[in-house]
Image 1 (cartoon, one colour):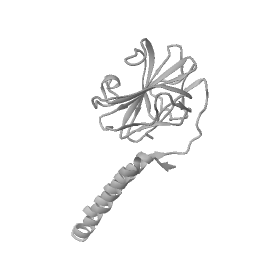
Image 2: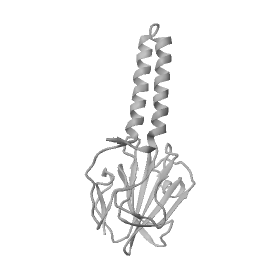
Image 3: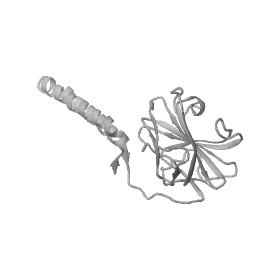
Image 4: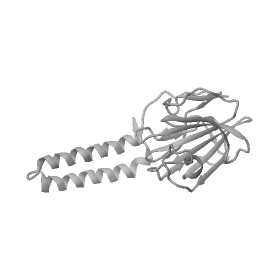
Length: 218
């Protein structure tokens, strides 16, 4: 396991908070209120370890398949439905939405190998990530990949806690399946908009792993 570069500042701040809180606790509470001092240590240690865990990159055997759309993130499948595209595409698409809790790995990966033909950031609200309108009203970053004559759209969506979306790809860039596409901090969601003839390989409630699970084939 390694730690993602996006976590450097957050982990440093958490480490300073942990150290300062426990130094103050030790000097002022350890003798008069040892139970409270111990509780502060346990709580702050738990928060520190949570921050580290949030930015983890676990070692995995990634799935590479030119005929498949691979999960762009970890999480839980909460939506599989036909929708009218609200951006880039003029037609209807199959939407697959993956909700990422704060406990999930939050690295986002390219679902396919191909050319980035669209990449756009949108300001927006911070509705809870499973809210139906979060896909079109929340802060989000949309990327469209083209592979041959086929295209797939991914949408990084901020949630109630996630207020920083990071995206690394640019229009015209050639990218590889499972390379890093971006990162969303502290709970969020990623939508995929797929062609109507895509063969969906997951069900509502499934828990895909980013870079591993096949979401669909085309």
